[in-house]
Amino acid sequence: MSEKNESPYNATVIGREQINPQLLILRAKPDTATFDFKPGQFGVLGLLGSEPRVAEATSEEIVPEPDEMIRRAYSIASSSVERRYAEFYLTLITSGQLTPRLFALKYGSRLFLGPKASGLFTLDRVPPDKAVVLIATGTGLAPYLSMLRTMLVNETQRRFVVLHGARFGWDLGYRGELESLARLRPNFTYIPSITQSDQDPHFHGRTGRVQALVEQEVVEKESGVALDPAQADVFLCGNPDMVKAVQVMLEGRGFKTDQPGKPGTIHVEEYW
Image (cartoon, rainbow, N blue to C red; front, side):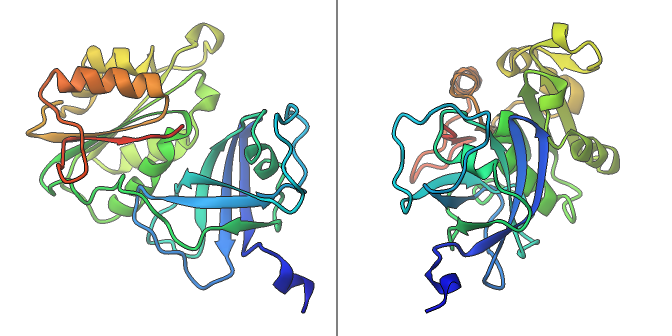
């Protein structure tokens, strides 16, 4: 049996863009013909314990066996129309097992990509006549990119709003693409925000935590979309404190969180 057949890897890195030392955009092309998924779903990436970790990584609390496959689920950022590869937006967890190894991958490196995407964090349960408000911090933006890249090609009526928070302007991954989309698509509004504005004087945009901006009605002011459960569904992904704070705020306005068998108007992705 050849060495290739013995390998547990079934995908190849065909793109990597390191936004900064902590943020990475990674594209994985499966050996099979296509990778099918719905916008908002997640895929599984994996590497063996024997793979090297980046220099910034701290020591592992539990060192995996060399032949142990380390797997984690990550939201897919690519358009579902583009089925040749799956794109992932990753943040480096220096003490983690998988991301320090994923960050060490180079163009052409091999890795494991789960054969099926999963997850219910999709637009399936949102009525077509309602606006969609997508709120994220950090790499919680990933599933929204998939939704926008897929839907905005043909969707000209439904309103989409992205409110994305990070510490600094250089942490706002995909900012250029989202700003371009907002210029090209009148039904899309992009609201970037940072919390450490004193250390990033060149950033010209909203400042403050995402939950504070929601409270200040920034979404309504910038997009004209009312945060009213009759008119919009809200998606939340990212920092658990942000998710909980915004969830409580919206429930106070009459929104209801999605539950199994009980479709709601707040959709939450448990990101970590």
